Length: 603
Image (cartoon, rainbow, N blue to C red; front, side, top):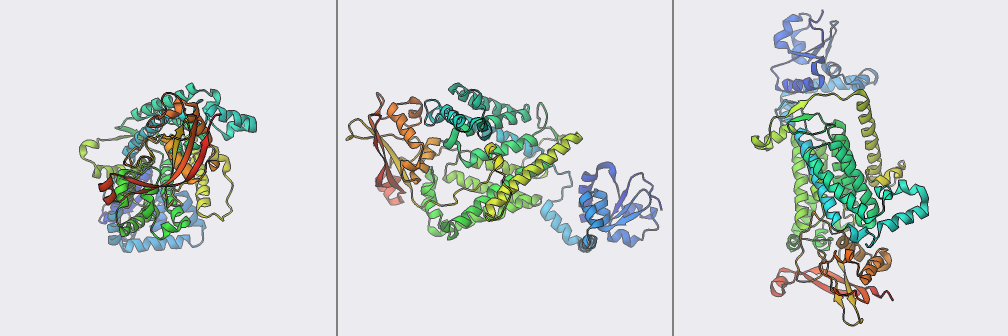
């Protein structure tokens, strides 16, 4: 018996919804290498194949007349080399495969309903053109926010007159470790350790962000943005040591390979995105969310007994006034919120790898959690970046269902298969990055496991571990910085954003991050300036009246000349309750604890 086609022919049951759906999906995979036909139309052409065989399973008829059926026919048609090898070589694999196939075939109505629940009824090729378009522009906006936020404070933090001058830092690195410093401290700042170059990196980052948002040369823009931001994070030292800084670097690095290799990316004409790097970006989102829940559950009793939100809203670095009201809610609500948070961080992330419909539900759940965090706390661009990563969970079919038609124009896919060397390069890069990130993630989850040392990648901050608030702070020590000319009358330096004045409500500042205000929160937790290496440098800049640092404050209590003495005292801050706020107009109450840093002078 010979097939009448020059290609293999897969014959299926056209009366079965389940069969029609999956045949449509297989056609996207096999292209024109396989022909398809319903047995209702072609069964008479193959009299040697019983009609019952066509009704029971698909039949693959090869050019030489060989007939394959069931699981073997599916694997051969899809040309899955690994599974075919397992089918022919691995003992028991063929039997299990055929058993599974027969079970599914005998219960096709049930699996047809399951398919509709999980994937829907759309048979179009699964693409992520709009998701990639939104992701790249969202990432461009995040980079823009990051560079703008940093530019307005960079000179007070690490400029030549700042708290931790970058030039002095690199000079110390050069003297202590020599040329190895170029690898351990990767930054373009080695080329020109000047304030002007700090300006150049920030301004250049802003310009490149706008280029990426406009869709021009996306790959080049992403490489440059990653290099510029890595350079600033490296010399930023403690002020750029936050998890969202390295998250941006890791997401930005993966985006380099995910972006199209075009001079201009247009919305209506898009090339197929890299499936490997799409999954790596999803893997990043999974690691971020799951690790955040895991470290809480494994590290701190207050998370496990569901009382963490009794403290969190008032003890987090920079609360919002919405967080003040959330703090007033009853304890049962806080405990329920912790349970919801654990569900969102430990259960929902597994939907990242699920089919279309549950994956979309997972996306909505993760975004909802980020919105709640935005309302109650200021975490820079962290939540926005997480939301941007979530967009990659929605494919074009689901976007069409979610968006009005006017927002979803027709997208023409440019079919340009990558050249062999590029396919190999993508596979190797994706495999290496997945291996490295898995090792680091595994080391975080299983601390006793003997895993390979991958510390050599740490300087580039592009394969990271995550997990915020592993240890919940149950009190809020707050540093109040004061200056005096006679050590009798002390005037307070008011920060722009961190708590100080008891009558000033907590503010919204995100996505901007006032990095000095944030570091003051960490410094207070250390209990003394002796445990905070940068703090004396900071106090010294106040004694010297350095304008770059003074601009980071809300106001300068010594506008004419710097004070002769400065000191820092430690208070315990607490949210007031509704009654106190109505009667006294205060959002905070405080209790003096001790001296954090005694009075010091340049003399």
